[in-house]
Image 1: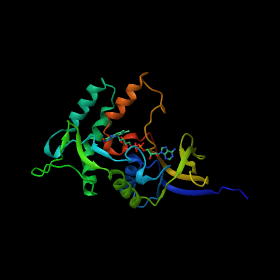
Image 2: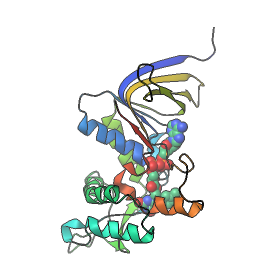
Image 3: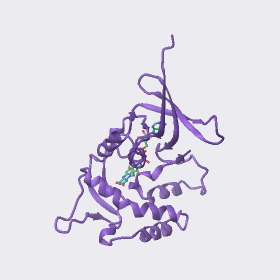
Image 4: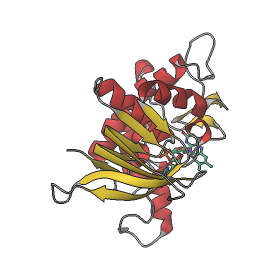
Length: 235
Ligand SMILES: Cc1cc2nc3c(=O)[nH]c(=O)nc-3n(C[C@H](O)[C@H](O)[C@H](O)COP(=O)(O)OP(=O)(O)OC[C@H]3O[C@@H](n4cnc5c(N)ncnc54)[C@H](O)[C@@H]3O)c2cc1C
């Protein structure tokens, strides 16, 4: 008898990686797809995984549109200048116009935000950042993902995406191993969202210097959850 078992799972939406992007994508998938079967797979544990695991002291981008502190056009201009034109302005604009509502959700979910008691405005550190007591940031967002997903698989390391047998050039799922038991997991999915962190070196770079990757990462709208979605494959 084989020592390790093979487990099969089918779903509508498979989210690979449960960092900020993956947990956010899981929450959003449920918002837009009420009746869908949604699964999130993470190699660690979503409560404390990814770059926000230990907590953050600031949210790197908040427009403050309700007080006319900044508008999406301002952020696009800033990113364009800083990156010498190497930006997708449409995507930057779209993220900028949604980021405030995402931050307001974190506030509603109980993330301790630093505010001016008289005006109610978030306290800033610089033009774009707002200050938080962010030790609990990741568990709070993970909680929203847990309530949204049909199932969260922790401790599964995805090793390969599966190609769809029926259609050329389409992803049909993913496979991986349980980091504790060694069991093999096969996920078949109609949609796969890969949110496994920084996409450095996955794609052929347009510039030779690593600095471009770094700048590109820091001038995205980081708290829009979907910041590092490296691949979105939809049927
Ligand atoms: C030191 C540091 C400080 C920062 N400070 C701030 C700040 O103050 N304010 C701010 O707004 N932003 C800050 N950021 C940026 C912010 O943390 C990131 O933008 C954000 O966490 C990225 O989220 P993500 O989900 O895309 O990636 P990640 O957080 O890296 O999540 C990826 C997840 O995928 C999982 N994973 C990877 N590969 C696999 C696999 N093969 N199978 C299964 N799971 C997998 C990982 O375990 C991880 O949980 C900081 C980042 C760093 C590194």
